[in-house]
Length: 477
Image (cartoon, rainbow, N blue to C red; front, side, top):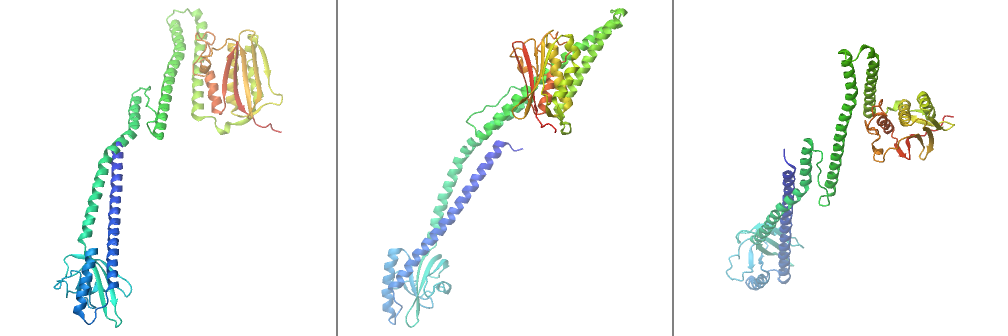
């Protein structure tokens, strides 16, 4: 499998190579066209200039040839263009060489070249072979006609070897630029790609370390990387932090479950073995069987609570269970179910419920469980002859605030963020919460969050209050 570094480097170099290749090719083509156009313009100007000062051949051909040769020789020296004058059939009658015995005199130019010149325009051939010249040439031809209709041609030409030399020089210059840019691009691309792939390699190495259980690894972030890579690094670090927290919670959960299971299992095992081996006399068996039964019920509550939490976290609250109901009715029913416990502790109970009711929407059974757990927690930690209050009031944003408040020990500020955690108990000795399994408030938070609502707790000056929100719906007329 191709690595990111090598793949990107090869890709960028190929892209640069292709761009330079196309640029060099286009430059060469444009230079060729420009050079041909320039030479064409020069040859056409030369042919037209000669045509403007030279008349058509007259009867005194020998005199005319000497004059024409002199004129053509002067022009050739000035422009560097070979110029000849041909008769109507293409025979050279005057040449810019200026020699009486010029080898070009009497030669014939091809008819295809002469046909390029019209009555009022100059013809041009980018490549033509002429017998009296060696090699191919570029030529411009101009036609002259006298009053009698006799035609003559002025032809200016240069060898193509000149343009070939220019193109060769241009090609060498382009090749030199091409190679120079490629040589400079290799280290530059290597540096750029290495800088871009470094964070990816760091994240890959960090991911491998995390796979081996090292949850404390992080990748560096900063302005040196691009915004996208920096965002990726931040997201990776957040993910690593979340995984580390999840792993810590998992370890704590396993430890807490082990502790919660070990205590009743140890009690059950010890008392059972004591009764079986005779350590506990038969007369005491009912007493210890009651203890064993209590521990079994505790284990059963623990298992049911864990299953309930698992179902809510996995499935949430189904839409078909989110139905309208009255919060006041639920709160009143739950409070009545605690009448015996409240009377046993001689608690002073205050309620503040709307007379018109409090219509909300949600899972009635789940919210009943929330109110039950909160009141159970309040009754449990409220001292004898303490105070307990239950209130429902309207709040902003079409919400109801449901509050359960009790007097009793103040929860330390450092403990407040932890009261909703699994198996967390503020009473470390657990003497006041012997029957609990440490999942009541965790279940409360799980249910409220599954309703997309909020719950919070305050505790100061011996008063602890739990408050959660529920949506408000219009009362049925």
